[in-house]
Length: 120
Length: 120
DNA sequence: TGCGGTACTCACCGGAAGGTAAGTGCCGCC
DNA sequence: GGCGGCACTTACCTTCCGGTGAGTACCGCA
Image 1 (tube, helix red, strand yellow):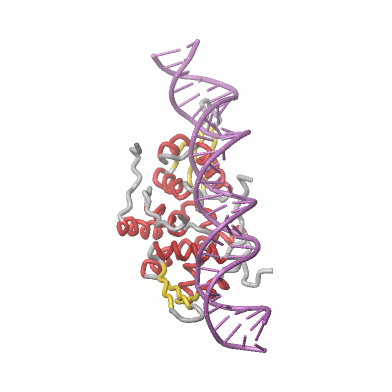
Image 2 (cartoon, rainbow over the protein chains, first blue to last red):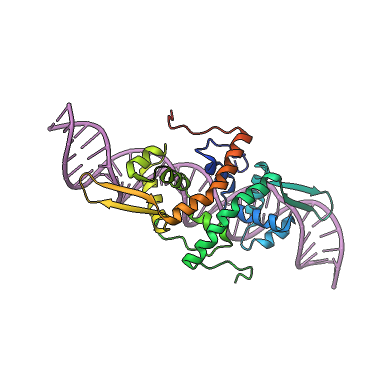
């Protein structure tokens, strides 16, 4: 349970891609890592207002299994773990670009609010 | 409940797009309607092996609220209801194209099976 | 000496997502 | 006259997703 690589069977490509992106924070993690290149665990946590540590770990583990993120542990004290995107993660992010544009347009259309980092 | 239009707030565009596509069958419905232009309820059901009637109705209603699909009722006996994509639905499908391609590549990569219409 | 930061793990819980099965009203068909 | 198809609705149940809060081992700083 918890960590077992997603593996179909799938109806089509969208299905297979969604399987890997589904999870409340996954697309945000993808974006955050793309923006900053490399991030430590606590940096990611601070960059995603509202995420719980449990969910962040769990999502990162799954994305690692799915070959989207690279996890590098530096055996120092205090612990230091760096996360970055793999080639597949990068290309997935590129593939998400047009979806992001569509979403932006939707936000305008329905006049939705955006989450700010200064959450109350 | 069940039917209340998704409306954020969102972190970013991907987030806003995902909100509308999330649901086990939504992307498949989008694809099915794009492929065939117009489909009746029972046609959609047959085109999506494994979907339950409840889920199909529920997803279609939500997608209608979100302005993705158009629902046209013909007041005849027996009932006839036709579903088709709106402009927003069409453009969402276009935006999903690159994601679909990425997913196809992933299917190849991990050697996942595809669901066939002739499910056992 | 004790607090905060690092990167987690573990146990528990509530709610939402999704599946199952039955019922509805009307018709055509055999 | 009973069955199947149309397009649903309703009630119930299970599973999973995600959140909460605690604990861990080690260190630096005040």
